[in-house]
Image (cartoon, rainbow, N blue to C red; front, top):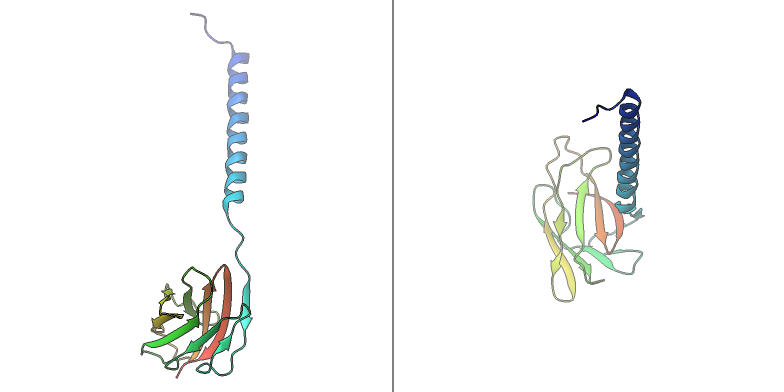
Length: 144
């Protein structure tokens, strides 16, 4: 069997490098195509939480019991869409860990019983991110 010359080895090495670069480029392109664009966050102003917050899609969010720290309270949302919405709570510039609540079917509306995460600073200023039908609505509120 004839041994490969130095020039043949260089050609094989170059071909492998081109193949590897092409593979990396195709994989990165594929991964970029698969990632959906994150939906924009829409801030919603709500002055009377218990009377209801009208959302841009026409649904209304109610804080049934009034938001309290360290105590569960109930949220209701007028039924919109077929997929159950979710709610997450955070504070401005403060990660509160994973605390996503899924609303359940309550007849003519969605409802969720939630408990705010513990905050060591004692702050009562919260942000609720409501995920509904591909939209994210952010509502700022104070807990009692």
